[in-house]
Image (cartoon, rainbow, N blue to C red):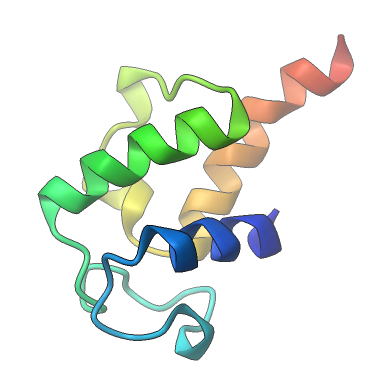
Length: 83
């Protein structure tokens, strides 16, 4: 999941630093992610993974790191895998 997420972040290109220099727990906001870019990233992730991120998950914490995004995506994709 993290590899796919890193690929999306590379293509997304809204960070001030290269994605490959970030650790999984580095702060994406400190790396240049703005609130507007977080919304754009949400839409990109929804399209890429065929999911809808529910309102309950839409907090700044969701977009705080690669780890937090990967955990949320894994949670959202699990029901699809079980079908």
